[in-house]
Amino acid sequence: MAWSREDMCRRAALELKNGFYCNLGIGMPTMVANYIPENVNVTLHSENGMLGIGPFPLLSEVDPDIINAGKQTITELPESSYFDSSESFAMIRGGHIDLSILGALQVSEKGDLANWMIPGKMVKGMGGAMDLVAGVKKVIILMEHNAKDGTSKLVKECNLPLTGMSVVNMIITDLGVFEIENEKIKLIEKAKDVSLEEIVSRTEANISS
Amino acid sequence: MEMNISSKIYNTPKEALSGVLFDGMIILSGGFGVVGIPENLTLEIRDSKVKNLTVVSNNCGVDDFGLGLLLKTRQIKKMISSYVGENKLFAEQYLNGEIELEFSPQGTLAERCRAGGAGIPAFYTKTGVGTIVAENKEIKNIEGVDYLMEKAIIGDLSIIKAWKSDTSGNLIFRKTARNFNPPFAKAGKICVVEVEEIVETGSLDSDHIHLPGIYVDRIIKCSSYEKKIENLTTSVGK
Image (cartoon, each protein chain N blue to C red):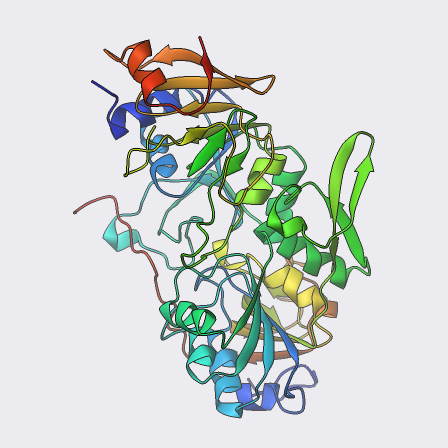
């Protein structure tokens, strides 16, 4: 039994440490916020210019001027602050954000990341992803282990256009948790009831354990 | 407003943009998604029929709102953006080769404009090293790390949205509607702002001004703001 999306988010949430400033990407990474342990206090950064993201609003509380980077309506907290986009990315580029969790299309053994573009399909843009992976202290990728067609997303070399080179530190998939060290992927934790053989057979990249 | 001695206050979007629009110009348009966009000035640019525009904006509006309106009328020749995924019309015109697109990573885009307004012609950043963003750009190794040179952007005009202005043009923004508006204001040769409220100079706390009036040339208060929501997400209901 591989991990469900909920299990993956819950596992990723364990990487958020007390006092961290974190940026959670669009999609599944945003959901990690729902699983942060109660005794852990983290401040969530939204690259459109906010620190201290609160929960989604009640319908009666919706304010069109408060959104996250996924353009979802959100709320503020007592500790929240707002700032402009150049300040927001100065925080990112300057290494002040402790952790970013992002999705991916491919991650290579060297920690190269491709997550913004599939040639031949409409290109939507990289948004803030290139800035985040270049500037944030630790980058964790949260993704399904295999693409819909079954191909491995942990690859020897990315063949999709890169978001950043040697930028990924950790990968959490439905099969387990991996770290990248010295240009090698190391398995550090298996999902419940998933065997090493299954992981190896479903992975293109070389894995050490 | 009653009698006003300030020359920065204009009465309508049309007046506020009179004499500053020309074909082929570069316009910086504030906002993130459709939050904090100068929605009334954008309508006026559409009605002015100015064309062959290069528009710098993080996004390109949605199909029927914001910059999407200028796509419909084919007034935009080129976009410089970080993300254009919300706009079907954009995709269509791009795939037909009708519109040019320069992708700039979001933080790089903000900094290129901040730098433009601050008299810095270019800067080095790690963002984009080893990606297609680095193509044809100088790479410089500084103390063992590769950086990419990115050039500043200066616009012929910036159109921005703020919450409140005083009659001197000192601005206060509201919540995440601030976003690209301050750096874009700084990088426009002329900056026109639309606001929800104009107050007398002296009634805002000088310590709480987000953008000093030196960056603001023309101000209009608009009577209506649609403030569309792209992605309504609430904590109850399905």
